[in-house]
Image 1 (tube, one colour):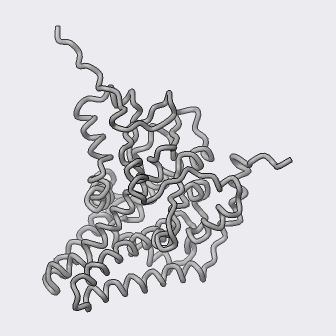
Image 2 (spheres, rainbow, N blue to C red):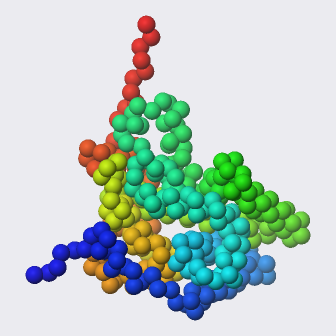
Image 3 (tube, rainbow, N blue to C red):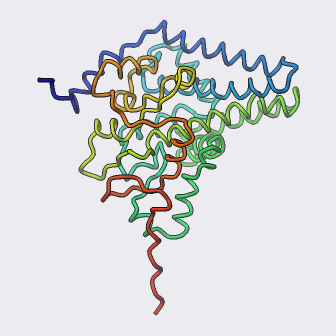
Length: 338
């Protein structure tokens, strides 16, 4: 008789051996990323062909996302956690990509500790209302909710998440803790102005604006789709379980080898949420070794899967599924005036 699938603490303990970092591999992952990024920047500066300059700038955006994902691993204690040099490099990456360490750790750690809890979906991810909550919301509340989850808001993550959320809103919320945000934004704007003055506006945009725009758009969509997909699950108070939320509230993003490298395997999101101390380069190995992780809810970057994720609007507790905007109930009628 086959053994029963492991759940809860037993399954988490089964992932523990994969937490072991290989420092040489970690440095290789980081330094190879810098080499590719530097090559992209050199092509933007030196190429005589506009099409190649644009292509290099776009690729730099994807490589910058890889930097972000390595930075994300470091902040989880999965990559170079005890290296002073590693910490310095990662702090610099946080400033470069407008994602200061204090803000990221505060919101993202909260997201991990509360993944799948309906009442906390807006912290570290995108808000999710139940169909009843959406129907009872005021017109202004519904508009704000839909604006936040709108595809254009996700694509504009450079403005909505990076500048607006990580640098400005966090500082307003706690200036003493999140003072790095305004500094990062000031350095970013000074760098942009300096590049525009010295090399011209187009080159400045290709070196700085295009890469960070693509990085934040990709990051924003991944954070959305990794928890807002057709088979996802959300849990009310009293029914939440960490393992269940990791396996059923997080998706496995199917990608080819190049995208897996560019995203540092963050598509293995159900494994990552089960144990965030596993380095990204060991997530595929973990999934392959543990049978309980091999039947995840899947999505991808195919147009059909992207549309299926983006059309979702609210959670239906009765049917235990996400509903699309076309399926959402009509707003509650306004109270009659006497």
